[in-house]
Length: 438
Image: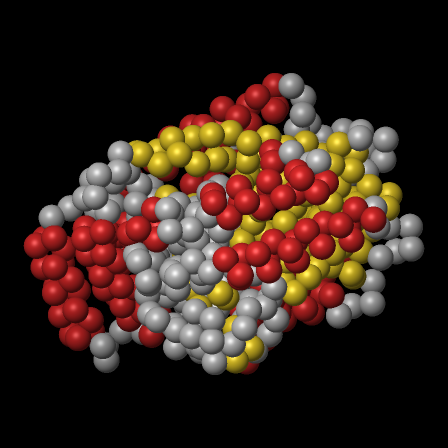
């Protein structure tokens, strides 16, 4: 049976005055620079339906996904393990979407715009997602599928170490119907944080600009961004400013590379879609002594003052982020009491031999690369998928005390446990012949 695909997008822009999420600073939206969307791809093969949902949000927690997948089942009889829910991680979208039971909210109450939980915002988003799914289902068409990989240099780097490995890869899947209309899915690893904590205008940041540029083409009806393993990847050392003009410049540059990559993509014969969800339990970090963290914070502030006029803007931003991280850890020390472990999910979503690996938090680029070396098919890691448990920090970075190590809620062994689990699940797919091309 040939693959059928349907796509749709619906606006989810919140009202002016809404709390913005993404930075350790209280911000209320003073205006709307560009609209936020949910984009939906629905696939049908062999009488099964699968959905990929993309949201211009900083993240979604398990409560959000539980409510959404329940409504999807009630309305369309599509099971939750067939539904992939992904946030782009823009830091200029609405807060109020994380439930008060979320560990991130417990750790950082009223910061990042997480609270207060706003049911009307969540209900509106869910209603728009359901409307998009309904439209996509009613417009399913046989499609030709192509996959390509390119290199998009000059957009992002490791934000803590310019010498660290980062391959600048952009992966593109196109779905073309008989009329020649295309839906594009593009995967790239980078924090959407060109706009900094001083921005008070709603925006999808650079992914919004990329998708806008693609969708303005006469042959493209929908363009979905899937953010890769970008915990330590950003535009810190590549952006020239934190302005909307810079969002347009970098977004336009990536859009151009997505178009070039799509034009050289190769066809996938007999495409088939499969998906699975796997639970995983991770250990909570040990809570450090408050006095120790206060001293570290004092030391970092002294370093910042000393180097303020002596290092690059990017390097100064790195030290500032360590200060933010130490302040975050003080919040964790004060607010998180006895929590032993965190249960969440990992998802595999396969389009023929291409496998999206949905990670429920912020995964390091090198963590994804390490897993990929064991397999001979494309692995597209997607952070901020189906849940948000924060940074998943490799053990070797704990002593460096970068922002990510300060703010993580997980024990140092968690990254190893996730990598092992993902490898085991992928081997199950591979051994069944599920991921072989041809």
